[in-house]
Image 1 (cartoon, rainbow, N blue to C red):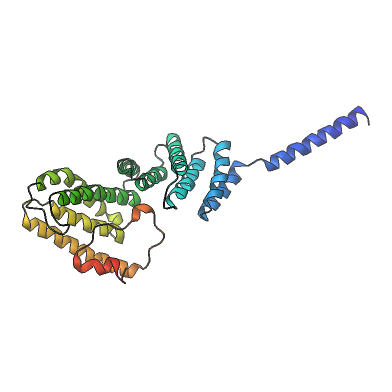
Image 2: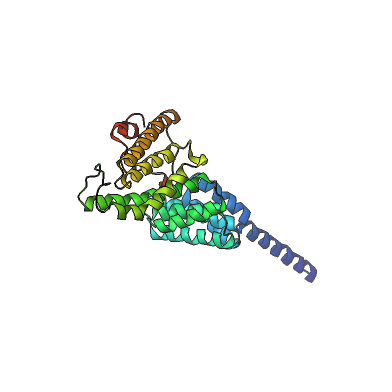
Length: 280
C-alpha cells in the first residue's frame, strides 16, 4: 500500500471513529427533550440522568437547571421522607437558575414549595414574596403566601390558648393574653385575608377554605369585642357554605402539590360533613 493510500485509509478510519464518538456523545437539546419527557411521565430518576447531561454540556442554560431542580424536588416530595441528597440537589439547581435569571418566577415558586415541604416557612414566604413581586397576579404565589400567613399565625394562637387553659373551641377574646397575641398575629392574618380575597382566587375552593379559617382566626383576635367576634364567625360560616357548594360541583381535585393541603383547624361544627363527609 502506497503512502497516499495509507493516508487515505487512516483519514477514513479517523472520520469513522469521530462519527461514532459523536453519535454516542449526549446532545444537550436531545437530552433536554428526553429529560422533560421523563419528568412528565414521573420517571424522575431517568429525568435526572438526562438533565444532568444537559447541565454538564450547557452549564449556563437556566432551563436545564430548572427541570433538574424539579426532578430532584419531585424525588423529595414524592416520599414520606426527603433524602438530603434530593433536597440539596434541588436547592442547588433552583439557586443556579436564580443566579442566571433572578426573575425566573417558576424557580422562585419551586423553591418556595420545597422550602414549605421542608418546614422552612420563613424561607418559603421570602420566595413567594419574590414571585409575587415578579408577577403580582400569579394565583399560586398568592395562594402559597396566604396559606403560610395562616399556618404561621394559627399555630401561635392554638399554642397560647392551650398554655392559658382555653379549650380549642373556647373563645379567648376576654383573656388577659389576647392583646399580646393579637399584636403578634393580626398583621399576618390581615395580609392572608387580603391575598386570598384577590380576584385570582375567588373561584378556588381551597383558597376560600383557607380564607374561612383566617376569618375564624381573626375572630379569636377581636379582644374584648364580642360583636366583632360574632361578625367574623358569621363571615367564616358563610364562606364554608360557599366552599361546600364549590367542592360538591367541582368534583375530585387533580393531583396537588404539598402546599395545597387542606387547613388543619376544623370548620364550624355544622360544616364538618362538608370537609370530611361524602360531599368532599
